[in-house]
Amino acid sequence: MALANPQRDVCVGVELDRKSVVGDDVDAFGPLHILAFENAKLGAKAILVTHNIARGPAIGGCRFAPDVTPREVYELARAMTWKNAAALIPHGGAKSAIVANPVDFPQGSSQRRELIEWYADCVAPYAEYIPGPDMGTDERDMDIIFRKNARSIGRTDGIPLDQLGLTALGVMHTLKLLVEGGFVDGLTSVAGSTMSVEGFGN
Image (cartoon, rainbow, N blue to C red; front, side):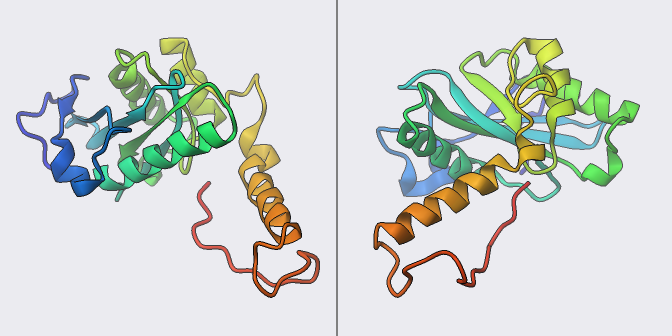
């Protein structure tokens, strides 16, 4: 992800061309914007994609990995739009990413705090986006973001999303309903069945 005229170490987003990132997927539903940030001092980049805010402020996690692309963040943001709508939550969909190696920013270190505070400053002007934990980030990171922006979900004083494994429980409940409803050919019960999981996420 090369940035045109990057604002080094400063949280000024560069708007990426939507068509070049998502191609023909640009439609009436989104994306609203695709932003990129860069911090040369930390050797990190960040991406924010707000897909749709028709139902309310957009909720979506912050992924932390060295190989995240704008296209990937867009696809995750789009999925959040439909996920929140299907759950009848009054929120739109967005997603963000910190593009760096988490090994270089261990949890509890001053480097980690500096990185998360920089990221929080980057997303602060975009009040339509509420970040949450995702792959590579957790409740402690959301605490830092909330202290900076008064805006995050999945904090240590709230529902412990990661500790409870709520995403996994949601997937399992959905599969159970699909099987019981007769929507999975050849499968009449989840009990005793064998499954494979692609993409463990967080």
